[in-house]
Length: 350
Image (cartoon, rainbow, N blue to C red; front, top):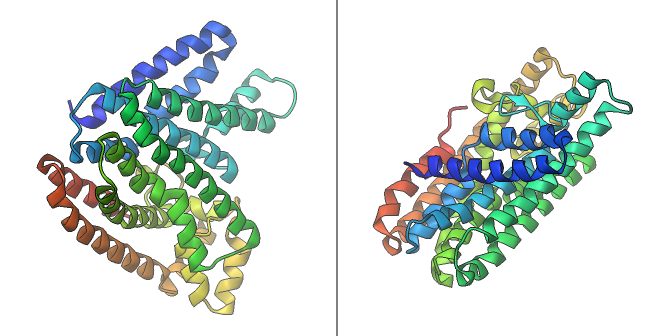
């Protein structure tokens, strides 16, 4: 059984146990429990636990269910971040299904309960996001890994959660300040996504295995540019991607008003007319297909898409160079795995 399948099994078992605990409190909580189970088990690439697991193996840890259980806690952290992110962005869908807050709005509407369905959905999403954050800690610390390993990895696990929260706030701040600078866009990409997606998970895994400071630095040199390339690819997919691949409507990042590197370059290179269009249309939840097409045209005409692709290529080269320095110091079994993960992270079709 491959690593992803084993992670799926661990998550399913953990969530089934948590569902029993919740529904024993009151049968009315059945939808509350099943919503988070559906969100986690019906989608996701398990990028974070996979990178953490293979970094641990690369640094000398043996394969074990305890190790896989520990790093699976990172997937629950991801669920927490996504549930809250969808609420902040007022997103309708995630992974081809209604976002959590929309799911509970529909439940409110179905039962014709009193009060605001929107407020009910928002409250449920906040609670479920918080619950996933708590569960990430529970799975991490209750995995059966030795206390010394957990103590070594704890600072990176804690730093990861702090950084993603700070990155999320910077993202919101940029939107409300209308800050479209490249510098801000890359800082948001780094702390909201890049470090949290690849670098920190690898540092967690390496720490679990007892890696020294020099080996961890080499993992960072590899993981940070790879994480930034991964996020820039996501930014392109969020505007130009196929909904069947992304699980979200085409152009959804434009409706949500994400101030990405792609937008920053377009703004910098745009004519006054192009800037006016970006100002008026970016973040409009009612954008029509024609308006999305026009914004895409601006991203093409200004060279923003091309420049973003070029930056992805440079970051990928940096990651490849760093990996060449890293691979002689890690377990040989992990080398081809990381080579495949590198390609998967940045070569997704847009």
